[in-house]
Image (cartoon, rainbow, N blue to C red; front, side, top):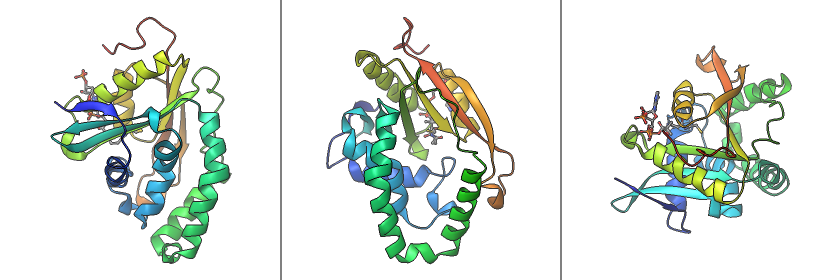
Length: 222
Ligand SMILES: CC(C)(COP(=O)(O)OP(=O)(O)OC[C@H]1O[C@@H](n2cnc3c(N)ncnc32)[C@H](O)[C@@H]1OP(=O)(O)O)[C@@H](O)C(=O)NCCC(=O)NCCS
């Protein structure tokens, strides 16, 4: 079985970025909807690896990273840093690169902007009770082996020790919803999203799941 341990710079960084891009689209590679791995890896992992590495956990099996959990104890702080320090740099780099001209990327950005204007990414306020968040990705070859469960258990234990009240996350994957329900999360919000309809995903929902950590059993997953 893999060892679950804290993130170590610089060794783990490239593995996390690689797994992130290999699993970014409903568990499948990012190339299904976007060309430009560096941009996607920066958008999805940079805050965690560079600004809150103490909340990142990896699963290591015989010297190889096979899964990770990127956590954050305070979503408000994350949003502030992301908008003021990370996004401007990524946007400038993206505009100056040739990726911006690729048809696949133009289509994706166009549909994302439409979804944003329709308020499909808007989340009702759950942050008071659930200030922390997480993303988790397991290399496809190592799923259903109990690695995700171990990573989530370790993270909940860590959050509880840090006196964090609760944790929430967003996903469009019904498989992930089933997994998180097993981890003691409940669905707090469900909203239709249309940004992937042009790829054939016409009935996709964005779920917000949450788990409070103030109860006795918060560090135990049955
Ligand atoms: C979702 C994911 C993290 C689960 O990790 P995993 O290592 O495959 O899951 P585990 O083997 O630890 O499973 C733990 C429990 O959840 C259940 N489970 C896992 N995937 C499930 C699914 N798709 N449907 C129903 N139950 C599922 C397992 O049966 C197991 O139940 P048990 O404790 O009763 O035996 C992993 O499949 C993944 O990385 N998917 C792609 C990326 C993703 O969707 N990330 C989540 C969005 S942030």
